[in-house]
Amino acid sequence: METNAYNQKLNRYVLTNKIVYTGFSSFKDAEACAQSKGGDLVEVAFKDGNDNPQLTNEAGLIEKKLHFYVDAGDEYKFIHSSDPGFKKYADELQKIKASNDKTSPEERYFANFEIENMEDPIIVIKNDHLESVTSRERSKYLKHASVYELGVTLPKP
Image (cartoon, rainbow, N blue to C red; front, side):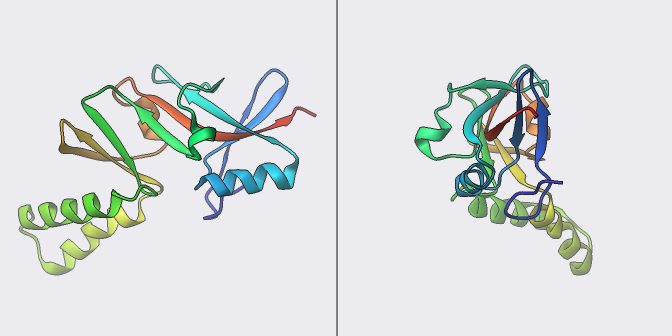
């Protein structure tokens, strides 16, 4: 099993003449994998709510040195856990949830634990207001989003 820098499982897709790995935790993580395996960095798109990767260069991930980007139109913004603004939004979400929650402090502690420990969390903002928290994998199926990930291709054996 292949893993990223945080020991999270990579996604493996078999295309006609290539194997593509996605799910890297950073640009450097993907770059290191490509170098160690003799593969190539590529941009992979997931569109129309499906999990079928398409090789593309639409989002310019390689040039921008990004590993993940979601385009769901002007009203939506997806903030990945590796983005600089993620902690600010996560802290605000915790405060809102705690103020709305009438449970005991112990229960609030465990509820707040969810965002920090969700695998690869994404905060979804709609029109500058928090809409939801989702995972990187689930973002492919939301809002008819186009999800772009950095991948590594290897020749098919």
